[in-house]
Structures are given as C-alpha cells and as structure tokens.
Amino acid sequence: MIQIGNIFALLALVGYPVVVIVMFRTMSQQRALIWSILGAYMFLPQISAINFPLIPPLNKESIPNLTAFAICMSYWGRMPNLVPQAWVGRLLVVMFLISPAITVFNNMDAIQFGVDRFGSMRLVDPNALELWGLPGLRFYDSGSALVQQIFFMLPFFLAREALRGPEGMREILLALVIGGMLYALPMLYEVRMSPQLHTRIYGFFQHDFAQAMRQGGFRPFVFMPHGLWVAFFVFMVTMAAAGRFRIAPKDLAGKRLLMVGFGLFLVVLTKSMGPLLYTLAFVPVILLMKPRIHLAIATMLVTLVIAYPMLRGLELVPTQAILDQVSEISEEREQSLEYRFNNEQRILDHVEERPLFGWGGWGRFMVYDAATGETETIVDGQWIITIGHYGWLGYIAAFGMLALPLYSLAFQAGRRGAAPVPVEVSTIALILAVNMFDLLPNATLIPFTWLMAGALLGYAEDMKHATNATRDERLRRAHRGVMLGLNRGEQSSGPAQDPAASGPRTLI
Image (cartoon, rainbow, N blue to C red; front, side, top):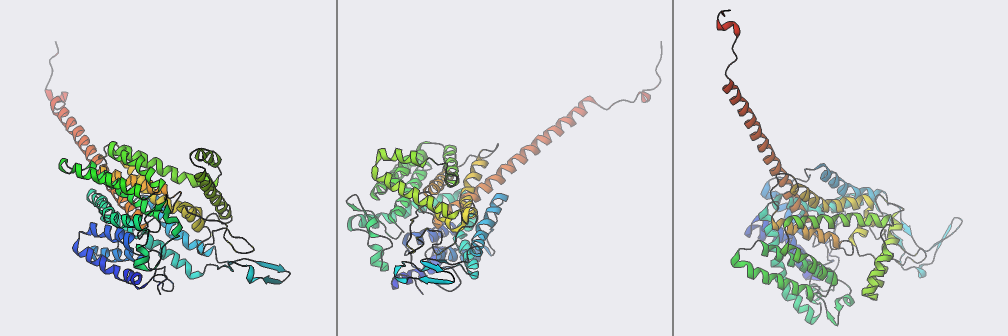
C-alpha cells in the first residue's frame, strides 16, 4: 500500500490528519490552515505515498489538503466558493480542471521501443531494451487526473476565503518566519553532518546524494525534495522577515531586523546560487521601496514568466547570446545552461506532435531512444513539465491561475480611489512572483505557492468591492449635491408669476 519508506513514513502520513485536527482545535482557523499546509511540506516524507486503486496517491500534498478542506467545510457548513469573480478566473479554473481529462483521451495509445517490423511480423529483442514501452492512458485515468487537479488546487480555494484579509497576510508572513526558525537547527545539523535526517527517520534518501555535496561540504535537504527547495524556502523566510520588519512597531524593529540578517545567513548556508541572488535582489526591495513598486516588479516578473515559454516555442529567445554572457562568468555554468536549453528544445519539439493537451503521465512527454527506450532528456523547470504533460492549454491554465492574483492586485491598486496596498500584501505578492520566476529553471511549485495565490486573489476581490463601494458613495454624494444645488436655485429665484394673475395693467 505504501509506495516507499519505513513504518515511520506510513505513520507520519496516516497520523497527519490527527495533527491537523488538533491544530484547528487549538489555533485560530487562519493559523491552523496555514500550518496544516506548511507543516506537511516541512516535515512529512518525500515520495512516500499510500496508493489505492482509481484515486491519486495520498502523500504529503494531498493528505493535508484534503484534511484541511474537510475541516473547513465542517466549520463553514458549506463548500468553499470554487469560482473566481472575474470571468478570466472562471475560464482558467475550468481549463485547469478539464484539460488533464482531455489529455487522457488524447493519449490512449501505447508507446513501444525496439520493435522491428517485417511485413506483419514484429520482432523485439528484450536484451537490447532498457524500457519495454510506455502504456497508453486508460479511460478511468481521466477521472483520476481530474481528482488530482482538484486535490492540488484545494489550498488555493481555501485560502481565497479564509486568508483574504490583511490579518491573514500577516499570519502567512509570521508562519514563514517561525518555519524558518524551526528549520534552522536541522539545516545546521545537515550542513555539518551531511543530509541524513530523512534517511534516519523515514528509511531512505529522497534524491541523489551526490547533489548534496557542494563547495567541499554539504547543503541541507532536511525533509524537502532537494537542497534547492530548502534554499528557496529560506529565501521566502527572509522575504517574510523583511516584510514583518516594515510593519514592526519601533520597540520590535531591531529584533525583526536581526531576523532578516539570520535569514540571509541561512540562505548562504544552503550553497545555492539562485536563491542567494533572489535574496540579494529582492530583500532590499522589500526593505526600502513602497508597496506599489513591489507590485510593479511582481507584475513584470510574472509577465516574463508567462512570455518565456511562448517565446521559446517560437524560437525567439536568444539562447546563444545568453550562453555567451554566462560563459564569461563560468564555463561550467555555461555548459549546464546549454544542456538545459537543449533538453527543453527537444521536449518542445516532441510536444509539437500534441501541442494543445500534451502527452500525459508515465513519462510519455520525455524523448526516448526508439531502439532501446533509453531516455534522452532530463527536465527541471516546472513550465516544461506542465507543457509536456498537459500541453499549451494546460500550461496557460496552471500558470494563468498563479498569475491572476498578481495582475488583479496590480489592476485594483491602480484604480482611482483604491486604498493603498499594505506592505504585508505586497511582500507576499513579490514572494509569489519570484516563486513563479523560479519555475522556469526549477519545479518549486508547492501547495504553499497555491495558498499564497489564493489569499492574494481573495484580497484583490475584496479590494475591488471596496473601491466600487467608495466610487458609488462618491457618486451618490455628488448626485445629492447637484440635486440640493438645483433645489436651492429654484427657491432663490421664487415662483414664476402669471401675468394674468397680476390684475389689470394701466396704459398711459
């Protein structure tokens, strides 16, 4: 039943719903929702899953999402509102939920390797095959794909209702900072002793151990998929600490600034260049610039993320010029980036055979040697994985849902009469935008990403209502003023006199 791991991995997965119930009983609803998602990401085992027929695997993503959803439904006495208010959001939700099912119907054919045909005869040499073939998707896989998409989106829907206010945003920042402090000790341990906590507790290492070695030492993995995930998490922690410093009262400002410095120390500890560059670039933005600048930068980043795959597909990205620039910094990184570009291009060429809905699961979107079945591509970026699985429509739906809150927030903030966006909101917006930017080189899309997106969309929708109410009230006051002015004008001029009523006139 359990896919991988020891008895502790199984107990952690089975027992986590009890932990979530206790959190909802002892914390506020907002705090419990945040920690039910964040705590699972931080501490539950990777890869381990409980498999039942016909439903997606129950793992560290689906179990917390389903448990939080069930508890929130029991509190609210109703389903959360699954439909965004804007028509664009409704269209994206429909596309996100339906496109995987269509992908299944479009990929029911099996892929075979090493088959030589001689007329009606088919000869296969099993000794030459690394992989026999890839199965065609089955009819009931469409239902499973739809359920999996719903499971994945649950934090988005829940946060859109429960965390949409400024208080919810402050709770998100606080949770990130506390999470970073909780992770500091195991991170320090693994930097010194090597990444082994996951192995000691759950019985297996979650990735290739060779990738844990960096710069003559180790980088921490703890209970996350890879050291890069830990590094990006600590970047989010540092951004949250910077946002909390901006809203701190004077007596707490010094302590909160120290938390920013400690977050920077943890980022350096992870020995990952990307998150370090993000930290050096965007933490000063949070500390020094106004929220409207935060939103402008977030919008530009998201536009770049949405445009990049499309430009790659049209071969409009100057990859060679980029490689030439990188080679001046590091020849090793230039070779790594060239390898990544080549892999992405081969998969894009493969996706052109089924562009709208992609190739589906079972690794069918990868490129293989037709004779041996040996894989010829390695993928890292979430954007290329999404396009490979679900095609361009699936990509637009998934990344459009993540980008929608940022575009909505920027639009509402720019309307006449709109209230200023608080720093805590703009900080989360910038964290989400950088997370989306990181989906180009990596696959760091996690349930907490969807939770932030849902909270921001809810805030943008409330902001729209507040601005509309202010505008309507202003129009009512202006209308009352006009009517009052007209009434006063009529009273000052007096009633019009009828000449016949003034009596006979004497002519001289």
